[in-house]
Image (cartoon, rainbow, N blue to C red; front, side, top):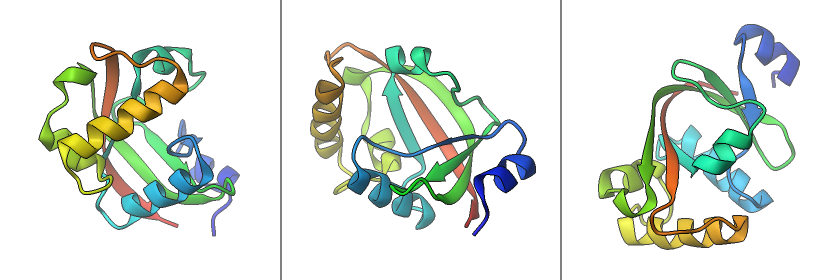
Length: 136
């Protein structure tokens, strides 16, 4: 397995992070990326703006598991701002969670953003689509 330092040297400017807000979510969603089911993610615009390192179009991310070990590398191909209430079935499917439906996505993300303390039906999200570059 590649170390984080090796990967950052191989992918200059890469940021490293894990999905979700629980260890189980980090592992499950990383596996969905590796298997090709998950090709998108999102966060609240407010949390995106607070990050020290944020994704950029064409930039690389090293996805970590719950033990902070690198699992794969992705490359951002699209970033856009969309309101929660305007997310569509296509994006929900690309997020690759649960049964891939919009209702599942809406409930799961409502719960997530409520835990984050920022949920509102009209809240702005940063929607990110990516491609898998390397499985580690």
